[in-house]
Structure formats: C-alpha cells, structure tokens
Amino acid sequence: MNRMIFKKITYLLVLAVVFGACSADGEFPGYEYAPQMYHSTPYEPLSQITNTEEGEWVSSLDDEVGEFYNSNPNNPYGMTMRDPAANTVRRNSGGYLPYRIHKDSIELAARVLKNPLDSSEAVLQGGQALYASYCYPCHGGSGQGDGPVGKVYKGVPAYNVGRYAELTEGHIFHTITYGRGRMNAHGSQIDIEDRWKIVRYVQQLQNQ
Image 1 (cartoon, rainbow, N blue to C red):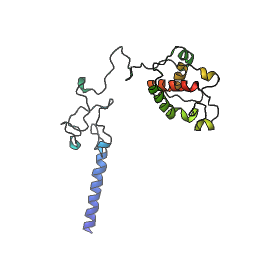
Image 2: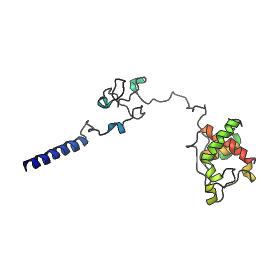
Image 3: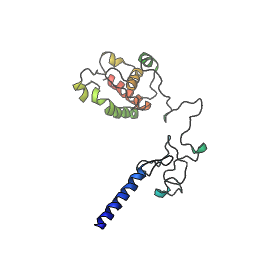
C-alpha cells in the first residue's frame, strides 16, 4: 500500500512540475516544449533576439551562438529589419516599378501601358505555361471561354470575337491585375513580368 501511495505522490509531483513549467510569471516566459518547431533559424524581420546564448542548449550549429539568436550583426544594433533608403522606390528583380494605376482607371491603362516584353518564342512559351495555370480553367485552351469552369458558368468571352479581339495590351494587363466582372484579381498571385508574358500569349489568341 505504501508503495502505491508513493507512486501516486511521485506522479502528482511530476505533473505539478510539468504544468508549473507552462505558466509564465513576470519576465519569465515559461519553459518551451519542442522549441525548434516554432523558432526560426533564419532572420525574422519582426523578431529580434539579441542574447547570443539563447537556445544554446539545443543548438546543432557550429556558429558558436544559440539556435534562437536571430539578430543581424551586419546592421546597426543587430537589427533584422531596416527602413528602406529615403526617397527610393522598391523594384523587383526585373527592374519593374510597382503598378500604381488605380483599378477604376482601365481606360487610362488601355491607352498608355505598353508591354516591355517582345513577342519572342521564349516569352510566348512562358506566357502559354502561365496561361495554362491561371487562365485555362475559365477561358479554355484556345481562349474561347470554354474551359472547365467556363462550361459551367456561361458567359466567359472569346478573345477573338468582337471588341474582345481589339482589347489593347494595357487593358489586358490591367484586367489581369485587378480583375473585371466575374474574373478575380490576379495581381497578388502573378508578378508583373509574368503578367506581361500572359498578355503576349492572349494577344496571340486574339488573332486566331
């Protein structure tokens, strides 16, 4: 009997320690279980741990700092995120400025936008591959509005009929970016250069 009581008391003590470790108090955040699952090894812009010994007990790296240390020693004060240089505009890897024409100004886009990409075979092939991923379900392989979704939800226009065959490159780019009618915006899914590739391919379908 004494042995059973001792075991129960031991279990209760273990449980008390485990649950006690989960609680936080003041500057003590509590103990972490499986910390490597929610601590990122790369720099995180919105997180900064300056203590070089933080996570040393689980570190498997050879950089002589704890695994959770994530400050950037190359920046002032070890910051992981810095403000962009004053009076500058961020460009992407292709050198394109952010697209700033308002979504309601499609007439302006249709009039002034010009495709920076040529009609080379490489551009058209890239546009075709992107078209297959993003446009085919509604517009179909030949741009007739007969994709799997277009067959169910009627009314998707054909690219080579009526005024749709005369849409400018700027109009098409603006529509891909912001959407139009039942078509959703794709500006957050497809980068600027890839949108222009799709435009080149759609213009090819307009002439078929």
